[in-house]
Image 1 (cartoon, rainbow, N blue to C red):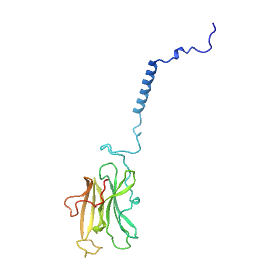
Image 2 (image 1 turned 45 degrees about the horizontal axis):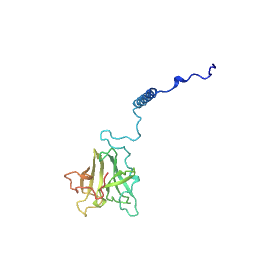
Image 3 (image 1 turned 135 degrees about the vertical axis):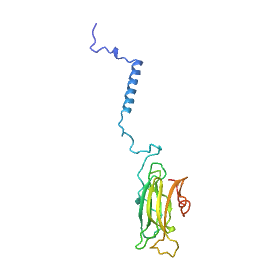
Image 4 (image 1 turned 45 degrees about the vertical axis):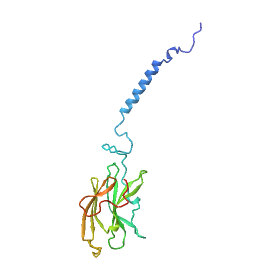
Length: 198
């Protein structure tokens, strides 16, 4: 009888037990690799672990949004800015005070809340103070989830624009789908009519 030059391959035949053992070993390696990932191997967007909120994005840039100021042919200027998460969703909003850029005098200011749309673009979602209110803003900040401002106004139309004679410290908080002024102030109960969901 002639001997074959090929090796005997009878011992390499696979059986169901062999495949089960291989699958189990592969699953164990994959599971172990998942457990040994470094701590920073996460998605680039972060979220608020306490609230389970969505990804955190940068605060809207006022330079990329057109404020609802009627300035005719003149430009407008942003005079103050504050940033904070007003609705607790993990994404910051930007609060700005702006006025028409006049050659002289102090035009009245408006206070606006900027937020990001679902596609990430910035937009004006609320007017807290309208220029028609004839107020100027002395300070603007976010404290916790509240917008605080110092407003200067006039007791009557006869008071010169240069010299406001009234000062009011006010704050707004996002509640029930709108910005509410704090109780006890002399202003209206809610923000401007263009208040929108954040």
